[in-house]
Image 1 (tube, helix red, strand yellow):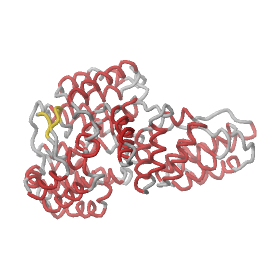
Image 2 (cartoon, rainbow, N blue to C red):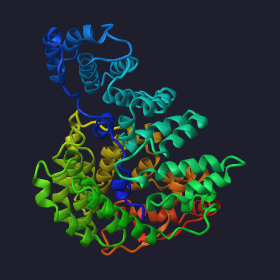
Image 3 (cartoon, one colour):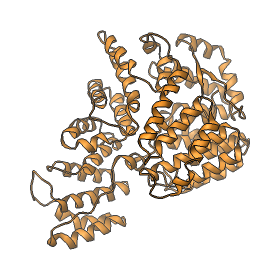
Image 4 (tube, helix red, strand yellow):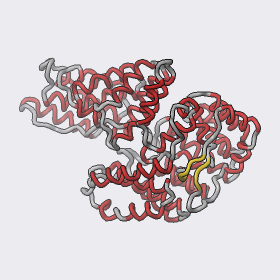
Length: 507
């Protein structure tokens, strides 16, 4: 079923919603270090100004340090602190070009810190400098291997997408080779690389001599999220020896994730991933018991090293598990708890939208609009994708109340920004009853080799959930769309759909 909740990304593959979210797991807060006596006053004054967001004053105090010709082969500690404070201040103030110029200047000095190298790459991605970002990624393992190894998967997802958009396939292949090497060690373990294995297989399969390489890359994919996409990709599935057994793959993934959680008792995120595995296997009650069993430790401010980042998603997983059991009030309460917490240092975005989607689905669209009213605050700003999810959520809530005039503004925004999330526009059009408009988007996706797998997945069948939930607000329009002869014919031309023996994560 294509429900409005389908937008939610499984915890294993959460997308960043902006620079702060992307940087939150990728970089450390600059650390003050001992500095020579003659630099103490301007350095302290500059750092203090940066911490209060006064970048102009920070620059006035710190520029003499950043521009000093101390040693071209080795950055001293005072200079490093000055650069870190300026870059951090400018990035927080959305002065990305200035932040990038300073990060670039710093990393041209020998032994620049890992933070500065990470920010250079993050800002190259944020400012869409695809080739520069690829070059920085290739350089970092040689000069700051630990800083490179710990970068977040979402950063490389965005960099790869930039290279793809610009048609830089040779650069893409080199980046993917690097990411699949031991140089990058994502926190979520080897399967966090599966999306890049799939992309490497796609690039290899497009070459006349690349079939063996493509098969080898696909053989390494274990994550059910990506196996679904391989199973509906007409080119890639032909390279598999047999169709993937998603239930067996999920059971195997559950075991790996449980082992990872046991091996890292100081981290909360592995447990939230385990709960997602359990729900996919139709075991939401077990997922809920697991999560609730951590409640006392979650309240302990020092129990988990990833607490700030992971706790909102712990609440999110409780909300999803309660929702899977049909417990509306408990699910809403959990999402509210997550909504009240910062997300990567910024006002919460993800759990806020998930709460609104829950409210609309369970017949409380007016409450959903009250929930989404917090986005009137300009500080609650998401990425282009996140902004589309906001418009879809709000537009569907308006449509559920029959307030088509109010929904029209969100539809207009979504039309103008369709490239940011084509499925978001299609779902919103379905909410408003525009079946023909949604069909035009989906027909285009089914005809596009790049978009075809994601489009086909929307029509695939999954195992029945343990509890049947209320239909989404666009369910009637979705059924009308599926019945259209042109949609049926396009699905057949694209290779047809599959039935998967796991529960669909559309809640």
